[in-house]
Length: 377
Image (tube, rainbow, N blue to C red):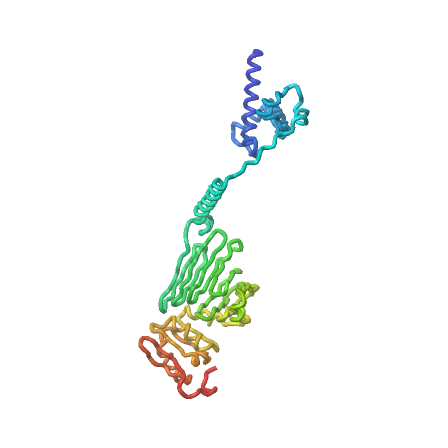
C-alpha cells in the first residue's frame, strides 16, 4: 500500500471516529447515549479504530476548559486594534469588558410585552387543561350519573371502581391524572373503590370530604345531613368547623377552617349535621346500611324527619312532615314497594295524622299533646 493510500485510510479512520463520537455524544451539549447496531460493533472491533476513537475523545474533551474563556468581540477588536501576538489573558486585564447600556422600556412596549405574556399563558392553559381532566393525559370532562324516583343503578368506572346509586341520586365524576373526584349532589351511593395510593379517590358531599384508604362505603346526602357508613376497609373524613355566630359575621368575615381528618373503619358511621360539624363516630349495622340496595329501608332510632327524607326518594308522591312530628323517633323496616301502607300505619304507632293534600302526603301531630309512652323508641 502506498504512502498516499495510507494517509487517505488514516483520514477516513479519523472521519469515522469523529462520526461515531458525535453520535455517542448526541450533540456538544447533551449527555452521551449508548450506541448499538452491527455496524458499530464491526467498526469498534478493530483495535486501530478504538485507538483513534480514544484520541478523538481526548482531543475534543480538551476543548471544554477553553469554552469558558472570554475572547474580545468584533467591536472591541476594531476599536482597540487588538494585536494577536498578545495573550488573551493579558489583553483582558488591560481592556475590561464593556457593560451594555440599560435600555429604557417605554410604557407602550411594556404593555405589549405584558399582553403577549398573558396571551401565551392563556394559550398554554387552554391547550393543557383537557390533559388534566382524564387519567394519563386523556381528554374528557366530568360525567353526570343520576336516578329517578325509586330508581337503582349500577355504575362501573374506567378505573375499576363501581358505584351503586339509590333513588333520586345525582353525582358527578371527574378523573384527572392526579385525582379521581366524585361529588354527591343528592341521594345515596355505595362506593366500591379500586384502591390506588398514587391516584386518590375523593368523594365530596356537602361539608364532608371522604378520601378512600382502600375500602367500600355508603354516603347519604339529605338536605340537612350527610352520613358516611363504612362497609369495608377505612376512609378519612374531613369537614369544616361550624359557621360563626351572626354577630361575628356582622363584625368581620370569619374563615371556617378545615377540621383534622377523622378515620372511620368498617362497621362505623359518621354524620355531619346542618351546621357542618361532625358527630362522634359510632357503630353501625353494615347490613342495615346497605339494605336499600335490596328494596328495604332499615332505621334504628332515627328521627321521623330523617326517615321521611329517605323514604321520600322512593315515593311517587311527595311526603311532608311537620317539625313537631319530625322530632318523633322511629325504629323499623320500610319496604320501598309498600310505602303508602307504611304511611297509614304510622297513625297507629304515633299520635299523628296522615292526610293527602293535593299531590302531597302530609304527616302532622294530632291536636292533643302526645304522651311519651305513645312514641316508639
